[in-house]
Amino acid sequence: MNFVLLVYLFFSRLFHVDFEPKEKLDDSYTKFNSFDDPLPDIEPNYPDYKELLAEAKENGEPIKAVNRRKPLTVDVEECSKCGAPKEYLYSYGHDPDGYQKFQCKVCDHQWAPEKPEQPKNHPTYRCPFCGYALSKEKERKNFTKYKCRNDNCSKWKNEHKRYRYRAYDFDVENLEVSRPDKEPVNLDHSQYGQFIISKAMDFYVGLGLSLRQTKRALKLAYNVSPSAQTIQNWTVSQTGS
Picture 1 (cartoon, rainbow, N blue to C red):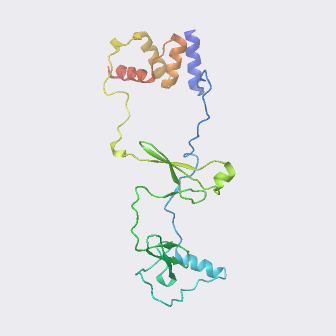
Picture 2 (tube, rainbow, N blue to C red):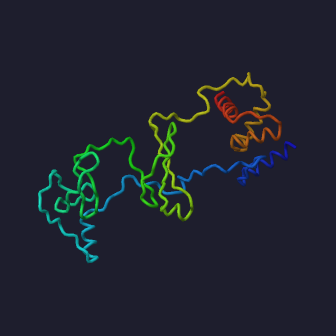
Picture 3 (tube, rainbow, N blue to C red):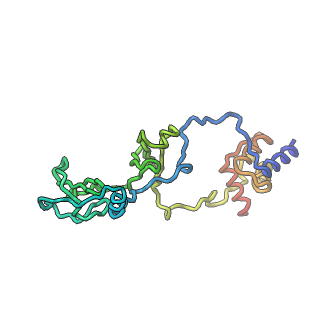
């Protein structure tokens, strides 16, 4: 029986055959598709006003400078979005806080130059399918999940799925190198004995099975279930001895 199992394990590894779980996994949870979809746009690149002026002229609708009757009440040099000079800017009332607003005749952008900007603790992520600003959906310890809520988004219309993106927040410099254990464990105190440990090494090191496959092989052959971490610690102890 053990010989048949070893042959099966060898060919399973050779032809990349994995063990099927006894119970079918529940796949009803939300799929994480951030690796399938393109990355979001961060603070979109606005077109230059010269390109917009040239495009309007080509379409037979040239954009003329503002015929100003009164000087601007706020000192502003250019549009904060496309860079159009103040000759294309005109006053556009006040915002709810009483700050003077302006509108650009070239790109229709509206803003209040003297209004203090709210500090941002993250950039503005925009959906790569529709350009809509992503809204925060969930916040976890090491990442924040964003979601496109635009019902006119092409992804939502075509696939009936929302675009989602995870923005991870951790310091790469502080990440530790993954390793099984800092010090080898004392195998003399193991409850499984040297025989099971040696068979685990045959499966994991000799046949090159994964930790998960090794764990299942031990269960099938000898009806023991050491954890994957335990098998990994055995490997460290064997190689370090």
